Amino acid sequence: ILNVEQSPQSLHVQEGDSTNFTCSFPSSNFYALHWYRWETAKSPEALFVMTLNGDEKKKGRISATLNTKEGYSYLYIKGSQPEDSATYLCAFDNYGQNFVFGPGTRLSVLP
Amino acid sequence: NAGVTQTPKFRILKIGQSMTLQCTQDMNHNYMYWYRQDPGMGLKLIYYSVGAGITDKGEVPNGYNVSRSTTEDFPLRLELAAPSQTSVYFCASSPLPGQGAGDTQYFGPGTRLTVL
Image (tube, rainbow over all chains, first blue to last red; front, side, top):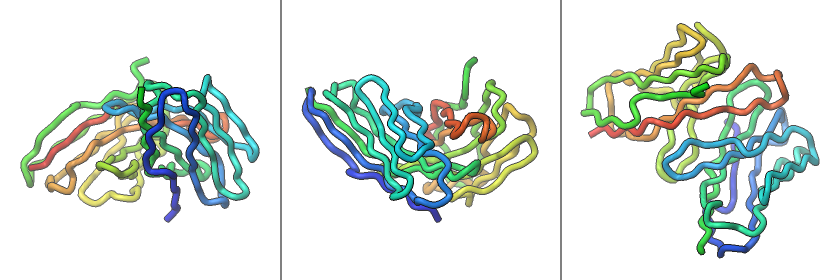
């Protein structure tokens, strides 16, 4: 059974703070690592797909890095806003098979 | 494109009742998935399908059945509902892997099921 972990489980930050969280995954049979943003009462929406060791992706104030050799990815949010409040999921994609999702990091940005 | 659609949005069942959760996608995706999401937990894979006529068990398949007679539809069947099946169910689809490295999954809006 593949194990994907995320930390922290939840965090609260003040508006304007920058923050980051971690996704850990198996370093073997790696194909891709996906990040999703999941707002309450909505369905998960894709943020990034990362495939190469050393990859760095950016979308506005959100960015992500990937280390496939040691099996981790960081998601960074710069200058957090209340609308960033959501659960951030990572999913390990081991080549054409089903995804294994982490439990998510629940972010609350306080105004 | 409507993307991935699910019906119903909400349902309350009594123990022992049966029902089918519908999932349809109009993106011509080969892969389709059913997940359940329990409070405080991540998404757990129930069943998946790599194409019409092919289905496979995921991590938590007990108590469920699926079929895939067409590319578009992937219904999930609960035969004898139990309180442990109270959850939010998400359907997702993705293109064939390898068509663009790491194709992402597209999710439906979810079905909230309560079994009393």
